[in-house]
Image (cartoon, rainbow, N blue to C red):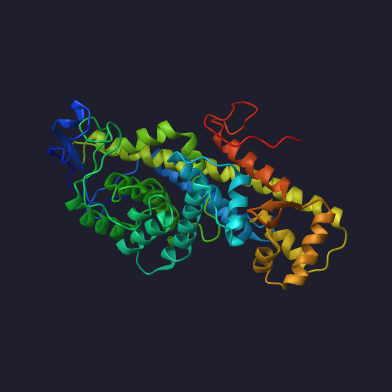
Length: 432
């Protein structure tokens, strides 16, 4: 049982008066009364985990710990971490309606690295998400304290250079809402706190994230739920809030090397995910069954999603280990610490590379890297492809297929596409 102090959440009754009525349908020209939700602060809350939920959290933490200590099958664990970070960003973006296949994203990423201008708007947004998450786990998670400025910078990096660039890194100054009409909150499913409460709530959230007296899985789950409830930005809240999960787990030392792509599972359990988050937004006494059950239901679902994500990743890792063994057998003798050996490991995290990007990955000269690339091409491990208008890249098709299968497996409610097909949109498996 974990306990902390607690204050009471409330609904604030407000009046909506449209500022610009011209050109809107009649129903949208009318004002309305609505209620915005003001959550409890976290640093003062009493949090009690039921015995079965505490056990779920323990199971999830054990699974993440095993993944980080046993993920040595790949000779470059950083490559696995990079690829899983990419998977997390893709899934987090998918929850927000941004769909893209692995090959398309990887080629767009390689084109960007080669200095090509991309006209793939969706790819650019997801690449921004990858960059924001990479920066958050590398910088914010290592900081002495998580601050509001850190959250703002994650958001800025997320939206910078996209169609929403003007909103990047800006805390909202207006009321926002979820669902219903795009013109007013009259029929909204949920109305977050009014803007004048946002900074105070974010400051409290950061203080909560800097604590060490809760299990890391429970802390990450509750922090994410609170961030989504505050909804501090005009757009990009979901992706920023899921990046916060990674920051908390990395900061607490639970996932120092590899953070499981939990968003792959939350995207599959989308209805349960939204329902469980909604259940944390009770309007009752904080010691009431509604408050207690809502929090426990969400933490339990989050812990289960984390366990499932670890299981899927372990299956993926086993497959990559098998691929590497097959490749090494086909290559024959490979000199230890040679450019070829280093590249063979590095491409597990970058299945599409140019000679220049591969050279940066393995820290070898362009000439040595080019020779290694040619050797992998001759062995059928890499295939030349065109990216952008003039550049050539090389892709490991079997890795992309394995990555696609990981996405499809995570989209299966039962974790096995042979038993239950993906329940959401996923990339198609490449044809043999």
